[in-house]
Length: 82
Image (tube, rainbow, N blue to C red):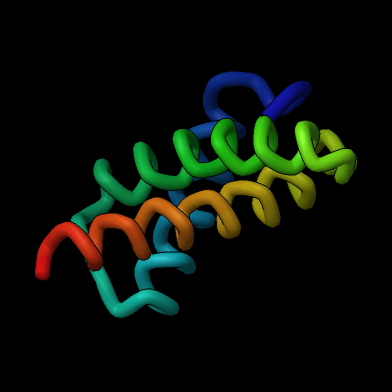
């Protein structure tokens, strides 16, 4: 998430992780929501760029890519939990 700075990345990542946790019905707490959102954003951005899909830098692009990546990470976590 370029251009947001450290605090902006934490806030957007936490929001993306929280929204993904609500959708996937998995809640891990505030810290894990932030980690899942930030890691998910990095993962989703890398995958989308490899696929030729450009993600807008900034808050909205970070939120969307973080949400997509966090949902993917939570989906895998849900599969592993079973």
